[in-house]
Image (cartoon, rainbow, N blue to C red; front, side, top):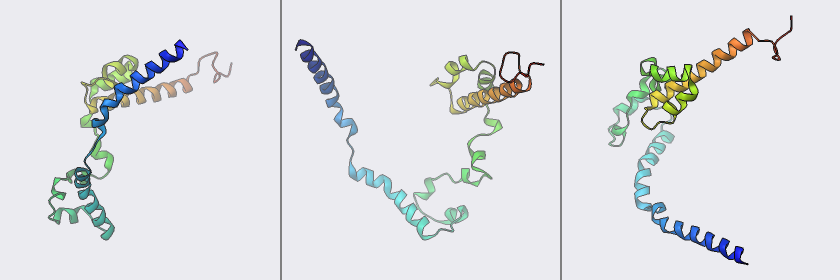
Length: 150
């Protein structure tokens, strides 16, 4: 009986400590509706005119449309707008390529590193893994399942 009382007391304390955070999850419906009004008008524009191009967007004089950066949409491919060789951080790439376990703590989970540095680290890890796999398949060592035993 004493254990049951202690358990109930513990859980009631935990529940009451989280009950005071209700204001963090509240929202104003009018503000939320105002935020989504631009999105709804864009959706209705696309539904009505399905053959619009970026040049057509640039000619339209709509205030919320001027806040959208259309320069990134002029690239030949979506990947070109996101990351290129000029954005590569070679130090982070070297951590991923040469010493990925230490680089994980220095680059990947660091809040001080930029997204380009983190992406460069992961590119280094992937390239190192691919080259290591190719080398292991091309030159198997004795005792592995790929070794033929000549």
